[in-house]
Image (tube, rainbow, N blue to C red; front, side):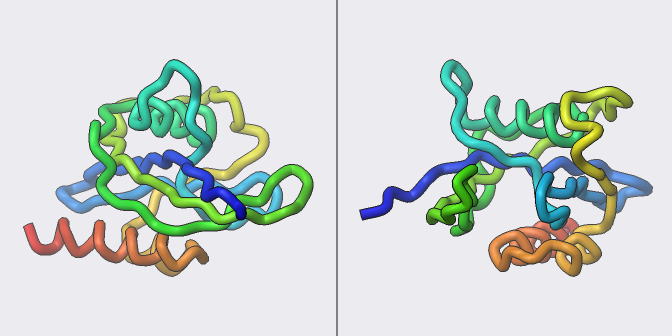
Length: 141
């Protein structure tokens, strides 16, 4: 029986003229648009691990929610090429600093966009729904 992997993700966002923008990054291998995510890290809480991924993959820091705001099923591709089931737990990251230098800057692109535009660029169904829900929350407020 295959165990389900857990990944922690950050949804980096900022407000521009009162409207939300989210930050997506490209995956290293396939260059798909995704949110920063990774496996649990020893010594870090779930939200701290999500914030660490945002720093490493997207070069942003800020205030991270202490509780996951969403989760969705995903598939994790291992180094061997095998794909295994995963669940992604997502934490909001209110971006306070955008860095010019960060660990994975040469391996990824990053892009700010509206939640609606992000929903059209991501390919994972759970991530599409997350972007649509995030956009709807701001429009309802």
